[in-house]
Image (cartoon, rainbow, N blue to C red; front, side, top):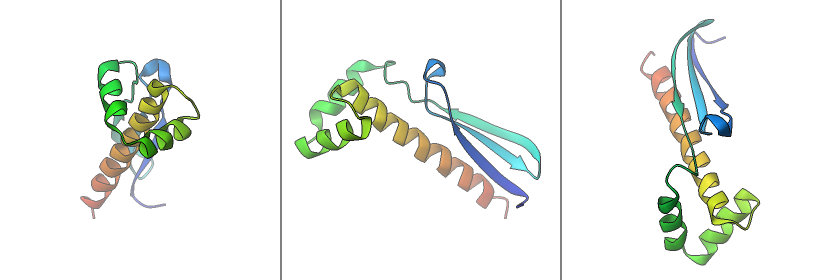
Length: 98
């Protein structure tokens, strides 16, 4: 097992959704962070985002959300951003220790 590593796990929507990052030195958890993706926190941003998308991108995010509701497409987009941010932060943390 590598000395420095990270784990990313989904968070419950009731807690704001998104992902939790955990940082490890060996078996010891030494830090982490939370990357929320609450689609209900700023609904006006979701509407603006969805309305600005070209039709094919709207279709893509509705399919990703498995829904016909723009709020669910916004949630899928926020989840993707949160996951990317958590993984990037974890990878950078590991890289800085090599």
